[in-house]
Amino acid sequence: MRCIATYFLLITMTVARFALSDDLVTGEVLDALFAHEDYSNSTWSCYVSDIETGETVYELNSDKGMVPASNQKLYVAVAALLGLGPDYRSSTHFFARGPLKNGILRGDIVIHGYGAITLTSRYPRSQTASVKNVVLNEQLDELVAKLKAAGVINVLGGLVADNRGWTDMAFNEHYPSATALLFNENTLDIHVEDGILFHCPGRLGVFRLHPTVLAGGKQLRLEKDGKPSDTIRVGLAEDNDDYWRLVSPLGPSYYLDHLMTALESRGVFVAGNPLPAAREHQKTPLFRLDGLPLGSLVSTMLSHSDNLRSEIVFLNLGYEQRGKATYKNAAKACKDLLEAQGMSLKRYKAVDGSGLSPRNRVSTRETVELLKTMSVKPHFELFKSALPVAGVSGTLARHLAAETIKGRVRAKTGTIDGVKALSGYTDSAEGRRLAFSIICNDSPGSDRCWKTLESVLVLLVGVNGE
Image (cartoon, rainbow, N blue to C red; front, top):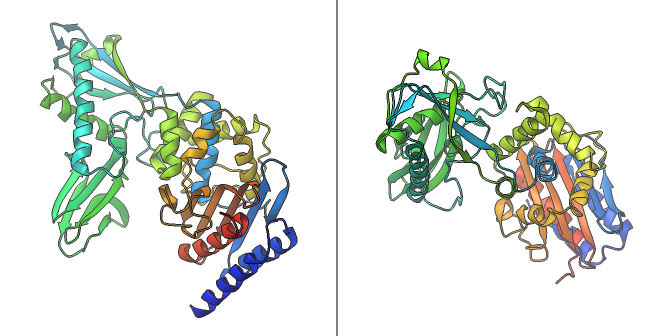
């Protein structure tokens, strides 16, 4: 520990002696940071460029294909903003199948899902589960009011999901909770206060909870047959909050189950089983629910690194650009949209939208090119404002809090096993606008990497900055 502390003291003293304009010394200090013995089994890649002049400030392995973790979300966000626009919304469509007269539907309600995030109270994350339930119930009230306004009071059939228009995936193997129909984003929020357990949605559905006083203030997903399950152990001994996404291959059933309960509790009776005879009838449109706008989704997927929302945006790129929401289509759509902006993406490989897959690849040079390309586009301010701020907000609220860089760096974080990444923007003390990308693969640990990232950014900003 003393050795590490001494090392960073020397680095700080060295940085303090030189301005960023001394590129030779800057490069030597950065080389030393990345070559520390703690990283003997790691690979660092870094690229830093002056946005206005295009000058390369520093590079190390900048053309190497690296696992990006959640820096993958930067590519999805830029492609979506440029290809779909911040006002884009996907929708959920409701139809009556069968004769409808005097409030009685002698058939089924058919719901077409298109990956729209509609019935949700996931954000702001700071709200308690109790408050979130109020918001969610208000949204359900509005849905039922639309159904009644369309003349439906009693449904003699059932609720039927038809998601074939959006995707031909029977099951999302990459991220099971990213489905065509989502209820509260297929998530359970759990809040413990004074030993009392609250959760949103108020109805668990497929989730199972095991409250215990022996687990402190922790929550833990339990396994079944060696695989993650939707059973959560919740410690009641201390106040705590957490959220859990579905891992079961449920398709639309989680959505339909919650919707069925919501309808019946609000005076719309549903018999429960689809009527075979109703299949002979054409579907009559009832209403649609528009999802959250893309701008809102991009904001949360970057600031909070929301995996579900990034997967949904990614899949909707595939749907809108290539006709079906599949991962192959999404990857092709994302790359095509970015290359249409003049970007060269020789190292870029998209397997998913969230960055959870270790098979994703980017280079730091291409990531900086992405950031620079976005800096001159119409939706840049929305994109930049969505990035976490060092020591202040999002996934950087508790990181990069050194006095000289706090509030002066906006960047997307990335962390999975063995990977630490950080890419974004900062201004130097000399007024240079910089775009940077830094990735460590086979890292020795997240905490160790954060120390190096902070030292790198202190150097880039300049310790004499105000």
